[in-house]
Amino acid sequence: MRFASLGSGSEGNALVVEVGATRVMVDCGFGLRETVRRLACKGLMPDAIDAIVITHEHGDHIGGAAVFARKYGIPVWLTRGTLTVFRNQCDKLPAVREFDSHTAFAIGDIEIHPFPVPHDAREPVQFVFSDGAYRLGLLTDVGATTPHIEAMLTRCDGLVLECNHDASLLQGSAYPPGLKRRIAGQFGHLDNHAAAHLLSRLDNSRLQHLIAAHLSKHNNTPQLALQALAAVLGNMPDGFAHATQEDGFDWRELRVR
Image (cartoon, rainbow, N blue to C red; front, side, top):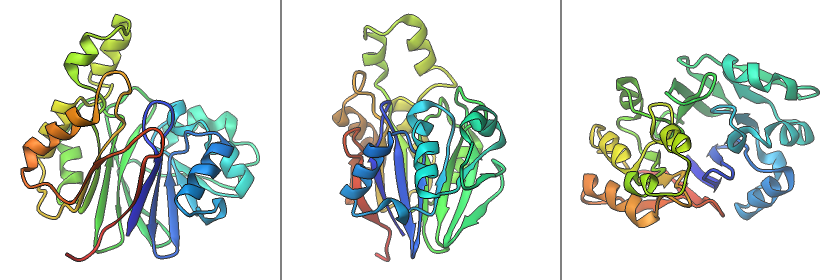
């Protein structure tokens, strides 16, 4: 199993997970040309993508999905709640498939375990991906952790974890008070401390790659995010890094150590 990000942040998100000949793109928040360009930077042609799996309906995650899927004949998978918002974009899509937020399903060689998360969207989910031997966890766009989230993400081999903002930077920023409350609220985004606290509650004995993701351009820095996570793990995996808005991160592979 390997995975790469095309970009991570409020201006657009997409993650590619590959197992064998199967490649799934999680979210598609970039325009058509930009998505094609970013895929090319990872060595992929658009028709290499077998499915687009959507976390929720916010534009930075779903904005380019319909156009890309329509252009290249790619099925889109999403929850019923997300579909209620996305339905008006579904004309002439090759396939739209619903999944239950608590029920695992498979696309080719990839087993996908969705789980619900608290976020200000209709039916938002995040995922654990598996090839039967390794587990990759994805958690971004979540306002608070839950016991179920912790149970899903424990003993992952790879983890892409939201470190959206530093709480002090956010409160001291020029953002309007309402936006600050939304970001910091129970249905907003994890700050560095909250992400580190979640990480401390997981069994990380298998962890090979840890990626800090969805960092705010204005209210966080890579150094602050990585310091918060490093304080939990002590001995950091070689794959410890952060995702950028500009080019995400390059391919990371889960393998026998």
